[in-house]
Length: 128
Image (cartoon, rainbow, N blue to C red; front, side, top):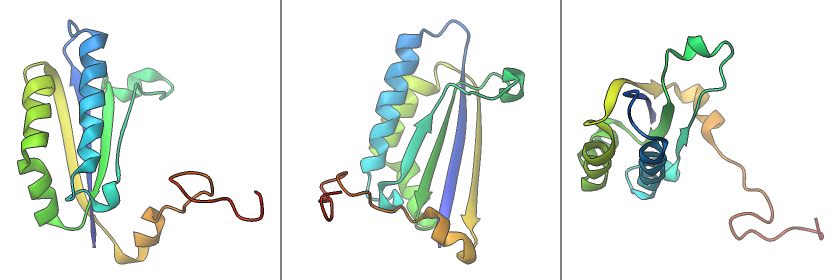
């Protein structure tokens, strides 16, 4: 089973871009936690939705994958997660939306990432 964790973040208007950049940089480090399945965690933003109003002012989104609910709970209870959120998010947020769900077994194949020769230390085959 895979549990998918999604969060959207909206900062208060007075929060600087420098602060937001630091938050994103630190948030991305959470992918190194063992409770993140396959170290699959991505942070994106700003939104490129057109028209932008459909993004409802949210600045960033996080998508992470966990083996099960226990692994998600481990992720959220980790000192690393706690440090990032208490240092860079909660005192500065305007809004936050969280949504977690189980991936259906027949959809698990969509989350398998293929290795690309030449990336992550893999060697190109046949000179390609």
